[in-house]
Length: 314
Image 1 (cartoon, one colour):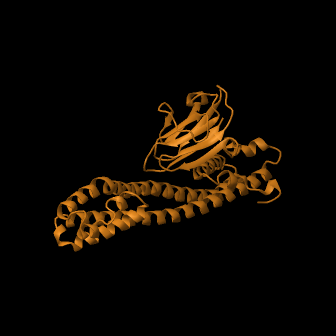
Image 2 (cartoon, rainbow, N blue to C red):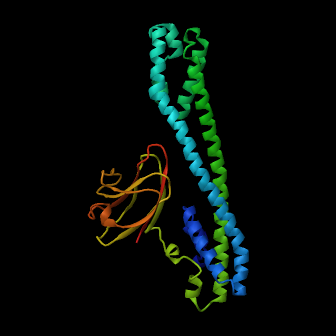
Image 3 (cartoon, rainbow, N blue to C red):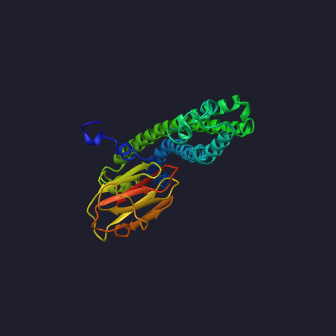
């Protein structure tokens, strides 16, 4: 970062942690330029800026759409693992015990650690345990009855895992693309700022009219953004609130979030905590809990999907 504040690009710093903020800010600027392009000077700025904006929006839309697909694919793999750890391995173990006494070598060859490898450990460890199990079942002629079912499930699990990993790789590529586009649009807005100051050197209000100043005036002390793992409790900020304070909340994910006040950091929500689905809302802080509690918290209610939020103290 440059030492001279006037040459630090505020559009890059403001949008660094939020592609949605970059979209909102760049869309406002694009619309403002378009509305004033009867002026040939502004028309020139718009002609240069608009394709950069379209490129950013296109990459953002692709990234956002793929995130939804990835969440669905991750859920599919997770659901199969849950089915494995509860219903399937229980059913298969009971059948194997019927064929082979649990104390015999034959049983130990199939399930040396019983059900544990399928119910604990990382996703990859459980996948490998299932692959080994399927091979051992296939090799045991006495288990021919369950062999087709085990092989079919293993095929489904393998496919779900490979699809999920391919999707994650695609997400990384799309994230890189939208990040590069974010930087391009930030530089373009900064270049236009210089041009607009040159056109209106004595009229700061006119320059500001081309930018969403509500977003531009956000500070790190009032604006917060982040992502949540499934069932994660997240401490947004410790702050002293009054009964007249308001807070802007945007649920940027697909899960339901609970936003609430708590007396201590990382406290879990109560059943009456404020809930918000995907979308945005401005609410009185006192509706989030006891005003005397100074920790503003958010909780992802979903047990499978990640969530996202943006919060601004108004």
